[in-house]
Structure formats: C-alpha cells, structure tokens
Length: 184
Image (cartoon, rainbow, N blue to C red; front, side):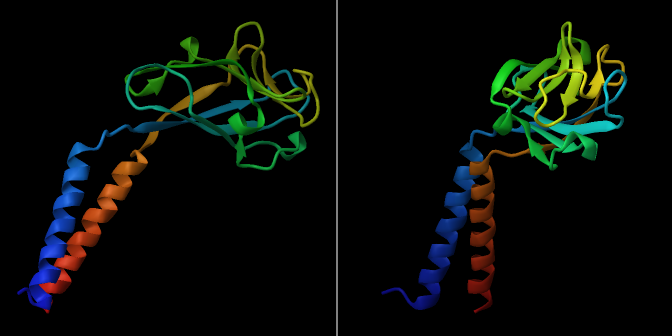
C-alpha cells in the first residue's frame, strides 16, 4: 500500500515527465515581431505612424499574421493600439520578405482596407499611408507617396506557440510540486 508521501512524489514525478515530453515533442513555431514607422510627406495630416507586424520566424516571404498601429496623430481619429487586420478586412497585398532577420522594404508590400479607410505600406503606384477615419482619399491622412520615410525595425522578440507555453507551465508546476513533496 502507498502512503500519502510516496503517492504525492509519484504524481509529481509523473507530471514533470509528462510536461518534459510535451516540451520535447512540441512543434515549436515562433513568430517574429517587427516595427514599422513612416511620416507625412504629401498628406494633409502631419505626424508619424508607428506599428508592429508579426510574421513567422526566419528568412523568407510571408503574410503578416498580425498588424497593429501602435501610435498615430490624433487628427487621424484612430484609438491606438489599432488592430489593422480586424478592422480592415480587405487585403490587396500582404507580402513581407525577411532576410537576415530584417524586413526587406523594397520587396515587401501591404494594403489593408475597409470601404472608407486603409493602411498601405509600400504599395506600387500608391506608396505608404494611413488615412483619416471615414475618408477614402489617399491624400487625407499621413501619406508618403515615395516611401521615403518608411522604415522597418529588426525583430523585437519571438513568441512561442501557445502549446509550448502550456507545456512549460506544466513543467514548472510539476517541479514546484516535487520540491514541496520532498520538503515534507
């Protein structure tokens, strides 16, 4: 017959083993977060628009899985942070080329819109802009027709896949339980 201590020890050991197995076999898909920034050159609203783009980790050409505007001039009318993909569901372009851990601005293009607003980054013949809420005009907003101020910052961080986070939490819980059992 098992006593209470040996049963707890066995449970803690099994939890640690299960968590370690999950961590070891988890499909580790990471995401890289990049920053973007551009300022007004030809538009009606002066200021800088900044945001983040989430792409799969590594080099290659990818579609963004998340795009947020994190700051923009108040005159545009957006509350930041602003989830671009959720609010601008019509995608005209969503292609980012990453080389050496940075976005290649010349070979990347993004256009997301709804019937009256759009965020555009390096779209051929249009440039880069975020227009005023409720206006469909390219020139009413922060606009850089020649992409001269558009910059991307290097990868800010990588985000582990949710299953990896859960597995790591299980591993930590099992280790903590194991230590408590050993102390008595």
